[in-house]
Length: 419
Image 1 (cartoon, rainbow, N blue to C red):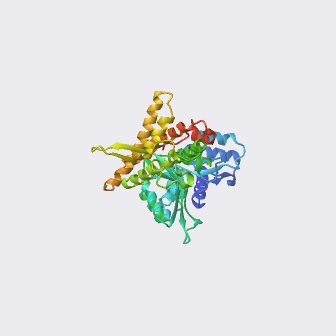
Image 2 (cartoon, rainbow, N blue to C red; image 1 turned 45 degrees about the vertical axis):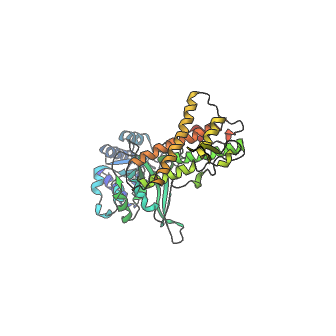
Image 3 (cartoon, rainbow, N blue to C red; image 1 turned 120 degrees about the vertical axis):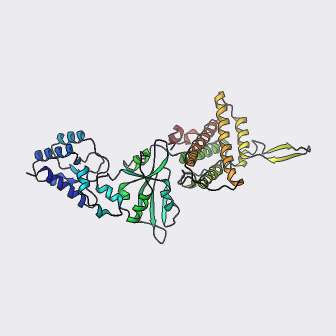
């Protein structure tokens, strides 16, 4: 009869020699099912192995996620009469001692998986790790606010399937909502030595969690549960244009920047610098005040304002787009309650704050600086901008000619991630 140590050695050897760190199908062990289950239970209790039963969508031959509790594993094993689909993995200190670290020199992420880290566990990194690929034309950098991918390019600028760099890159957070990059070990472990060292240099240690939709979409293959703030913001622009076409026969905004038309600057910062924050503010204001089509208000609002100079002479100047919009809203829309009036004031206060922040860099020479405060300031402004543009849409959809059915259900309900 095979001993406990012999079975553990067989499981360990198979795992380390399989190339992709696969588990051992226990059906290949030539002992009776009762004896096999008895030894497996002992090894699980000792913390030397874990098992997968091939249930659900999980691929039992790859240790994708952390193992269930010992009690759950043993209970599942004892309840089955057929071990055909049971797969065993080495675990714990005995596995780590069996690994020859020299074999994985320069490849820390492959070494980590060899020592038992599940391939769909995330490693976390400083946001600036992405700069190299965002700014290098040799890579195709395609990342939205939650998940993306990075491809290497050939001479013609087309992505090659066999040169896929990172298939899945996402974002995570700590308890203070500081944003970080996260990537699965399964992608990291197959990078060449130089790239593994590059990522290792930017790695963070601490209590981080991946964005829920990153896990939901990449691990479980499901559609994201909610939209991101930048995505929702441009969706609101599109909804407003759809409403105003119905109600007025013309668009309020010159462009909605929906979907692929969204500027890359309208996204969470990759590096917390004054320069990147200013670029974000520039594009955010451009999508609001500069995007308002003054021709929309022809016949609705007087575009000019008269001012009396100190010498008594009257001069005429054009009103700004925000002032024209504000006058039209106040003239047409009557708040039902006092709170609605305050919300309107708050909406325009937000629009003007964004306008002010955008114009400051244009009139001053500011030294670029690196400061983590820019992450939080940007997130707070994104939340305010989304809430303001959403409230504008809620006002306009009260128009009797507005077709509310054109508003996507997720946007109507406000299913939005605020991080």
